[in-house]
Length: 470
Image (cartoon, one colour):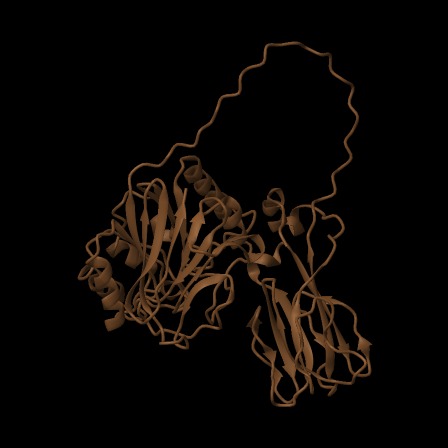
């Protein structure tokens, strides 16, 4: 379901700023049920499972919407959350599903609700619940038999009545021509390396050496640096970087340089200072720099620095700063890239650990690419718009249609598994991927007309590249 562009910014803060009108007509969310004796049933937008047959629902798969869900199963309790298209529940074990929880992914959550109801043994259809609430029963040994799921989108605020004013006298004047505003075409070219979560081992050294031997103009590190504590660790890591990378090496902090205690970010920033004449506060991880046709913006949501913890929540001063810097770059015709440590859209184990409305705002503001770390794997979305709607999936994208999100946490330190690779993701790699995890960095090449990004690998089988064309 698509929310009109004029509503996107308003919906992100609707709960606090304006009352909403009555909800829009619900849209069914399709799904499949695995049913006792029948196996997987055909995909349905009405009833997932059966009623009136006394057959247990054993597993479900939901599709077509950016949802995640978890099943409560006989003898097993609550199983882990899974993404759209993946199985919740069990098959081949003759175990009943007893309850389910369903929620929208964070990017979608501010634009509506997912509602669902369950048909339960002896109880029939239960009342509708929504947004992660428990549907079904636990501790009663009652089987779920069927499920219905729907999305209800938020709607525009009800307009306030307009007072009738006394007409002013008509004054005839020569109209002033409206000046034509043309967005200037960006000039020049640039190349940027992006990495994160490097550590100080051989894998991180290989990633940094690969960046240093390339012809990129600058490198952007997205936090979690040494993964070690102790006196002088910041200087040791800076020396580790400088031995391999000669290009300007820009930093934003990760949680390990703040709340996790692996050195102080202020010391890292002092020994690897910005060499590019940035604007903003480098020591607090909030800055921007123009490099050829690119405006690169570094931010630090939910990083608990001694100087404070900026959340970039709706209505905050840091959100206002971010939106202003993005719009200035767009007005200059630049490609806009935003880099930070903690992601929200991710296939890694961390999930969303920062403000959930930020991704929706970045999409609304027209950011071209968002790069992040924190999860020790690589993932890259297709070009998406609100509700995680994929607007293009051929890796040849048109500027202005949506935003690409990437997690480039495969910089070398202790690769981790991924939870899956749903359809909105173009590429994913973790320790449980075919062929194992891939370490490396993202190379971004930009001219006035194209922005191309590709994964440069130092180990592992994954390849990935995409281009956005003006």
